[in-house]
Image (cartoon, rainbow, N blue to C red; front, side):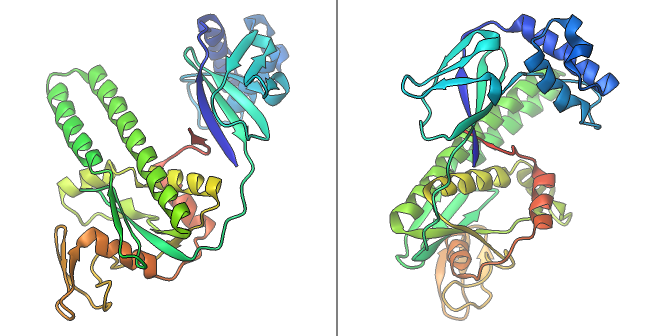
Length: 335
């Protein structure tokens, strides 16, 4: 399993980053992969090779943006006893605080503030779950509600995310009316960072709870969820700002680290079926009532119980690709 950790390096690489941008532009223009062709730019050949390889094969790239200095594992030395990484070609020493359990460092990418250290870590064998926790992900209210049918316990997590989206949506509207588009971009980035932090905390709580109780985690398979067009304007905004795939990725990689199994279920009618008798019930916003057995519950809690009790489905590669293509997301997990 590959994870990426962010470490402050405390060096000024402005000159090297300018040269890296020139190398990337050259790669896009000529599709060259030889560091000899860019030797005149003055960037270390080891770094030039990595940049040329990345940008020359990307046929969709028309312009290089945010080019980082990339150093392969051959150019990295590690002393795990002193928790130090040394990059000879840049004469850079890095002290790291992330877990010392990695097998190797694959590569390091650097901007002018951070070093992004990509490491391979061993995956523990997943344990056989004694039961399942169903996690209902939502666009409004709590972003995740985890329900355990065995104990009846419910965790409602991440309610602040909805308020964050509403706050920054209103801020952006005001700035757009004033024509301050640069500020709008800054506000959007700040919102994304806050929501990412919330997702990290929510996913950690869900996975830790599953580990402590010996349970696996069941999620709805939400491939193609954004393609539906029959919805109100307000709900469409909420859905498009919904970071459900980011939360899913975080749950998956944190679960792998602890040996917790993650499975998927068919999402049809999870929020409308009664978790007690299985009949279709009445849902009004966050309230659920079953007209057959009389069961009353919070709608998201009821959906979580349904998810936990549903049979697992086999998600094909095509389905996973459709989710990734729709919502984006990093290949590795940034810790």
